[in-house]
Length: 200
Ligand SMILES: [Zn+2]
Image 1 (cartoon, rainbow, N blue to C red):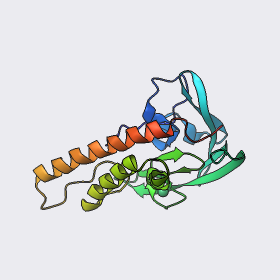
Image 2 (image 1 turned 180 degrees about the horizontal axis):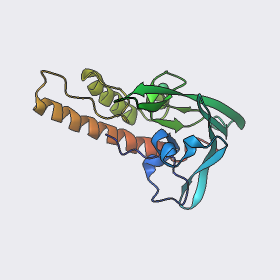
Image 3 (image 1 turned 90 degrees about the vertical axis):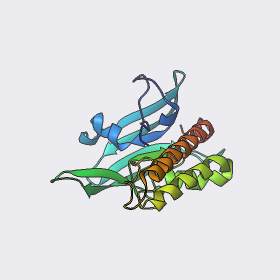
């Protein structure tokens, strides 16, 4: 599906709901964060007010995150984690960089933050039953379609290629359905995480 946002600092461009507390590796790269080996602060804001912030530092092995977090209603804790980079080969000798999710080990481009920063799948699975089964279900249905096509389960990744032997019509139908489910998931995700989990 694509089009997911980034951890965009306040004041830069229009703020999208999808951007809420996510850290997009492609965005970090574009903004030069991955070439700076010192701490930078990313903040998220809504209506001109800062809602969250996190400090990040690119290291050889991964992205170091430092922030304060708490369980719902609990005590604030300092959290520091290194999210390892992993690499996949692309054409010629270029390689693509990913985050390796600390919970499931999957490669992903975008981390979502609550108390910890993890891939969307982990985030969705962890919280779906707690707060809102509806949008979690949309995610698992979207993932089922991806699984059937033999592609990545991460809805941030490009939609899988058409398998041999599948009719284009069927493929297009699945593609449209997956886009619809992923959008449903996004909007549910946004409305439920807009300020739900305390961070900063
Ligand atoms: Zn994960």
